[in-house]
Image 1: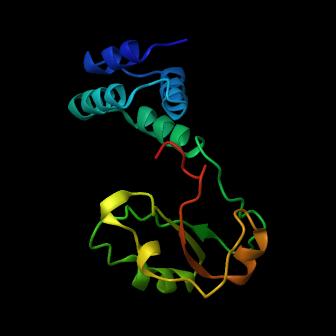
Image 2: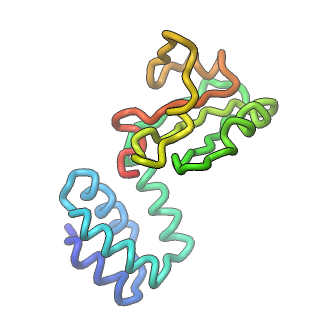
Length: 158
């Protein structure tokens, strides 16, 4: 068991976070056991002291595993995700999706929960009345490109 203060102190003092520390802090943050202020302090320590490649990879994996993921294992062609930050001026998603779809299925999750910046999913209305179920494997077989809004539980720590 770790404490947020210990994890922050490790990184603040220039130490390397262990896999267990990273897994713990991401999990604890999603359960509100680490306060926003503590996560901000950890982010500042990481910004000031950096993370090595192994820490970065583990942090990324922990974030991915913090929420539900779509299983596209039944899709025959390769799949990619172009995640939208939802920032004002995200002008690449709409022209990029059909271009990438020529080669691979492109399921894109746009974060419509990202606040004032909005997201592509907010400004591109879907086919009227169409609602694809989260995790519906048939979607990957029918669509070659999709722009979607984030769902509860998807990318939780983000």
